[in-house]
Length: 440
Image (cartoon, rainbow, N blue to C red; front, side, top):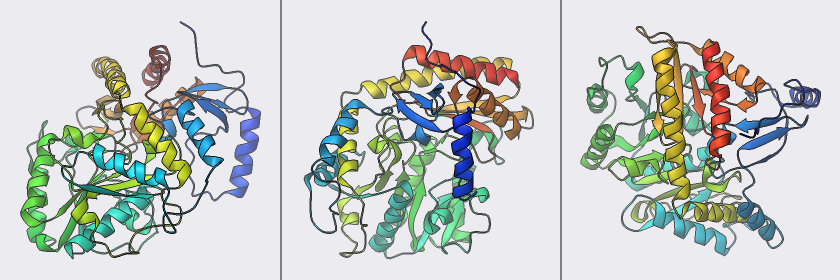
């Protein structure tokens, strides 16, 4: 088997160290960096740093590159578009790529009936627009979000985000946001061993003890929590959530910024939940690395906002639109979706071995190829072990695989390799990960 990983210097190499030192002098410390390497170029599932070291990418730009680095069709589309029109702004006039992308998203989302889409620049901006639309459509102000949820770093989306590490000293936050327990079965304190539905009961109780149901504009949920540790929502929970929203006229918003565009084995994770959201937010892998987000929802909701109430100068930039259209073309035949399922099956098979043989491996979970491995100090108490994950991440980098942490307790390794990764590359990367896991 030919090898993809090729390390020609120590990691990080001298050129990487020099550029990272320049970054530390020029860029605020608050901008986190998972690894001390500087990247020169990338293609498919590989990245090469400025020292010439080639790595397998198991992070994919934090879930942005499901369709792979520098996909030729995307590169060609961006190049052709850049020669014609780089920017105009949908606030000034209309260009066809914006309209075509919205039409295709309206047809693709798992929402029945007429839909409409507005484009934005980032997942956070997409979520913010979805919240504004829900508030105007319902005439209500309160929003329910979930423990462990991550929705962005703007003031609104940071208010929705759960993990305090992101929020320290950055308040005060947006009012009228209420936090519900998330069905995190492995670390649940309400149930024994398997989900009993107690968290859903507690959510319904919140409507008596925390906020009147008739004041709630929207419930926002990630069908698979991303930053929270790649935790899928049980289908039964999502169905109860849909029923609750229907009962009280609440807008159900699915945040698929990280779990969308093929990562879970379907184009949208909500396709596997048995219910429809009212609004769905996508970003990250929608445009193969170009900054783009989309808010797609029922037309009668989307049209409630007054003219000028939503929008932005760069939202739906022509370069990003043509990139997204090519990404949708790549997913059209279903091959990448099947690939996602096969990648996930191979990772889970290895994960089952780890769970049998390695006491620190507590849980291996996810949908499709959106997989996380949760590490614990003790399987009985399930006490999180973030130190083990830090050591694994460092070991992987030193041996040519880029990984990243996740989880409410920062004790999960999350896997987001591009779906175009070959079987040989996948097995090569998993062999490094296996050695890393066993090293702790």
